[in-house]
Length: 237
Image 1 (tube, rainbow, N blue to C red):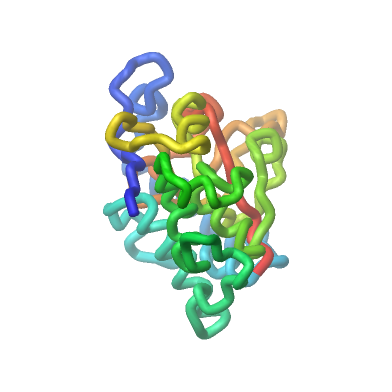
Image 2: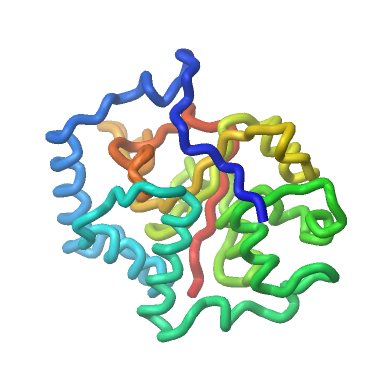
């Protein structure tokens, strides 16, 4: 299975991540203090999903919030750990048999969708188009463990803490991935992370998202101009 999500910062200047809010140690400490206070006051925990709540709790209590590594592995590890702590077994045991395709087992389908491992093949096309290219959000939603949230819903305040997210820098790459693409001829720029809380301005308007990833972007809130395509899944487990 091929995972081709790049976690190297963009080099272009217009809208580049390197141009937006250079993080400092002091700002990071302040941000973590605010999140911890919100957590203590139970304002950002998801009461509807014990797994989502456990993801946020584990992140805020962690002494290593930026473990490095691949964004997919880190987000999936946080999801797996929380699920295990809540239910006492792997989430793979609870995948529905209906997820299986002619070519793959339910576990394989979940992993392929999670990694957006696009190919020009019957195997990729055997997976529901609705969930292709949506990474963690598509895999978890297809497993019946959550509800998809699109860009409009994300920026209109519909996300719940602990939601897993998949984004794409360029819409044309996302479209190609959904349709099936030879990854050797395409280097799409995507990212996988977990939503922690919204950031608001003085007018109470949403301006950004506090996230948990491997350290690539979590030093500052992500903002709408960072990516063209946004998908998330609110957990229901």
